[in-house]
Image (cartoon, rainbow, N blue to C red):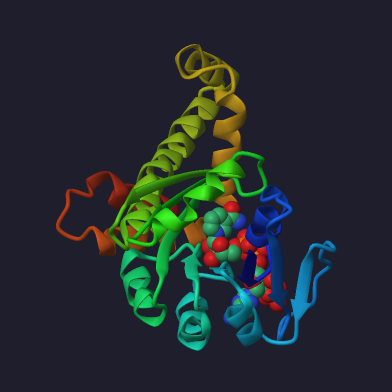
Length: 240
Ligand SMILES: NC(=O)c1ccc[n+]([C@@H]2O[C@H](COP(=O)([O-])OP(=O)(O)OC[C@H]3O[C@@H](n4cnc5c(N)ncnc54)[C@H](OP(=O)(O)O)[C@@H]3O)[C@@H](O)[C@H]2O)c1
């Protein structure tokens, strides 16, 4: 079996590292892209079209902005499964599904460079990917395209809003000279790793506040009609 990648960055590199089987080889291309070092089990072809044609499973992991364009260009050449792993909205996911006959909606949850990310998949062809569970925890959500993307968005709804609350409360703790005690007190109920995780979340949010704001805007847009009081407050906070 050949797994092909359109886009060979952190996600694809890590998947090719985790999926270790004598029966599986990998292919990608750097057509029009900056070339990268690849390990010897990855064949580098001249064009992405060749990658699409040759692959039993074609994985699109490039960027949220290029995901639709990539599907329009190469989806028609994919005879096997087309798995999209880009962080895109459920609406874009459903649009992309029109360009590949055996489309699977996918979302990687957890740090991609960790050894234990979880792959959530949805769509009627998702069953064909359940064998991946041997290499990376793989969970089928439903037969509905868009469900994996919605789940990822729901997770972001929680984590990004929580980050805004963390930033606010830790700043108040700092102003009162109680930052250390604040994290210690929370660790009592939230667990020993809470402080490190909270600080990493705060730093990540502050360093990427523009992207995080855009993602919150997407959430507000997509879940229009739901009660989004907390998400809207988090957006206001990040925009300041
Ligand atoms: N990193 C994560 O934890 C994570 C988790 C879940 C989902 N995702 C999603 O997965 C996708 C890939 O993420 P990543 O972290 O692997 O990104 P990355 O490290 O930035 O790598 C992206 C790769 O895709 C290539 N690329 C970009 N546009 C392309 C196009 N139009 N055609 C072909 N190749 C293209 C880039 O080439 P150049 O270097 O030449 O630009 C690069 O090799 C993104 O959509 C991201 O939202 C990421």
